Image (cartoon, rainbow, N blue to C red):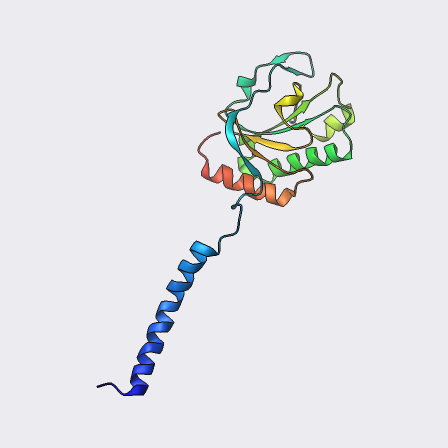
Length: 179
């Protein structure tokens, strides 16, 4: 028969060994943060249908020519206000932050009116694809991600946080074999 002190010691050792296992199961099933790991709002997979797009020079742009890369799409009128300028800057910084993977990402500004943006603004954003297109192709004032197959997949809130978009895009490029 065991002495009471030995029994207590054995139960204490068993409890210390079982505690991490019990805690991990409890956190796994009940301690998850709502939402998920991504910052952007995941969209139901649907083809991005920008309609007829015309580049600034007047040449029609086939939407199929944009397939094969991840697209950051921003829709706004050509009279770009401070919010628009900031969002275009965010898109540029997010793409640049991807380092060697940045070539897999294309930035597209869908100008929703018939006017041409200022040359000064365009000079600030080299490599930005500026096209005139249908305003319904993307919500105005929001950055959207389109996958290399041409499907809308994620939308960011108005006035987004650049660091969180960088984290999302880094994760997407790391795990995606597309683009």
